[in-house]
Amino acid sequence: MKLLPGRMQVLGWLPDALVSVRGDDRGRALYLTFDDGPHGGCTPALLDLLRAYRACASFFLVGRNVERHPELVQRMVDEGHRLGNHSYTHPQFGRLSLAQQLEEIDVTDRLLARFDGVRRHRFRPPRGVFSLGLTAHFAARRRNLTYWSYNSMDYQRGDPVEFIARMRAAPPKAGEVILMHDDGDCAIRMLETLLGEWQAAGFQFCALPHARQTHAAPEQDVAVRSANPG
Image (cartoon, rainbow, N blue to C red; front, side, top):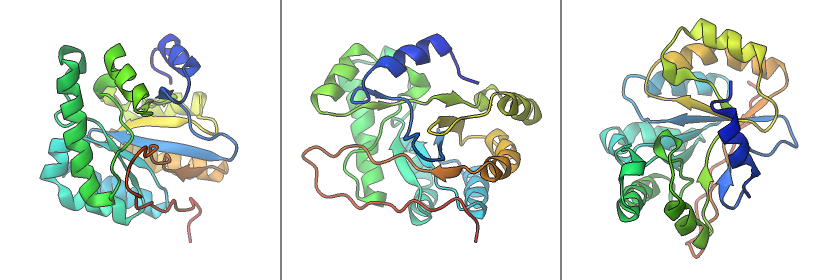
């Protein structure tokens, strides 16, 4: 279930200081991540499902969607999830100048800080596209790009039953960062089945740690809940 395994393998060779692909694999954690939200028609049901399993996740949010649905972003923070930066308009990053890319990132960081008090968030580039210029800029500021190690393929908008079968055939391992999306019901329908199975296999569902805050004010941390109900 890993998109473009050769490319992801190359990214995995890069130091975590530049590109983060996996989470901590010393325990039994899976790191659920959701791109493109918040979405008024999908996010409430997704949050309800995560709450039912006491699962914590990371949401890589689009800034203009944050402005449309601030109540959903506040709910994410209140329920123990972590916020990530997925740009302000979700543009084709490869067509933007470095200055335009940084503006997309900085505006969204400022928006998110209103909710969680964190000055600088993990950044996942739209469609996974990034430039050497952006990587060098981030590296100089001790900031990294956040990717994933396990792709659910939910963005293909296919039958969730087929995606579930594929994921059962090649299940995630401890420490996997799972890519899903919060702009449709596919991820919800998949997780309605898979969260219980993964939990029965002994996994916990955790949020990614906050980005390093170099020369930043102290941040307000967010608690990570246990995946065990009750």
